[in-house]
Length: 462
Ligand SMILES: Cc1ncc(COP(=O)(O)O)c(C=O)c1O
Image (cartoon, rainbow, N blue to C red):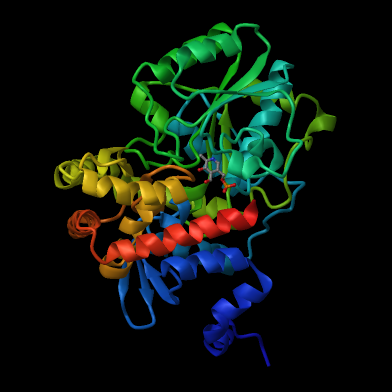
């Protein structure tokens, strides 16, 4: 009998969690069950997910930022179908891919100084390439990165990770990587002063925490890097592709890095992809002789599916004016949340750029709420956020999560295609969930359960 995927899925659907438990990540499954996120999603369209009972969920996690255009965009599907049915001669390897050339041309047009492209299969691979290229181009080895940074989890990228939880147990990591505080120009100047740094790798807005630097940070970082002949590498894997209301977040500050990294949303959420856009001289230092023409690369990089999806995604960004939409709707959503939540004791700040938004919580001022908040924080810093996120999901069907470990910050990465109705849905739901958390009502039963579990799990690990 010919293979039939739909039939297979229909027959085995009920076993989804059992299979995952048996052969994949049991701890992730435990987490999902603990917070009640173990839903059997059966469909998805645009910013929405659907379960078997026809319930609609608004997805503000966007697959960690992959679904900027929402899910299953018809334009990207059509492009992928054209590849599948087109008998393309892809991945010949000893060939010059037309689709890669076209995608490179369109990406180069987004920042004309960066007119050479290297394609790969993920964000972490783009970071690995940036590390290698920076070292090769400058003949220096040191890489400077920031506290709280997240650049991926392969060895080079992990060596630039500013969060111990990810690093612990995996050492030794890459040598000659130096951590400095984010948004601290004195620290950057000191780190670069000896003239031995190949690259400063930085997210224009940090994904973990949604930390937005002061307005002088990136322009001054640009100046310092130029002065010390250090390459400025902008990791735009999360912030790029229009997420913050500009194609690259660096554009908010008029900064042109030497290398810019993209991945996540570049292929419309369908195919793994990564891209490294750089100045021509950097590329030419790496690929400097004919016998080094394949000195860095990856078998599946430049594959037709990824390149076609990338081309279609860029077209959708323009045709649907999604970048302008991210800027305008993001601003009104951030303002709306600020107005609705600003008066609550637990809420410390609402910040964002475009569709990258954070709600930060902190200790309340009144005595009666202080003890409750401390119970959560002592069990696990940032655990309080689950008292908002769990009801948000269960009562309002909005999927969102914390902005990182050990921080009381919720991050929203809405698909750029959400509408005004969705904005109202988000604001009303957050208002409701945050109000409930102040009532010390039923949601605190959940709080006590989660705090107990967090303490037990820490004791188990000790
Ligand atoms: C800023 C940033 N850089 C790099 C990465 C790693 O990308 P990937 O998960 O595709 O390896 C991520 C992923 O979350 C990211 O947010």
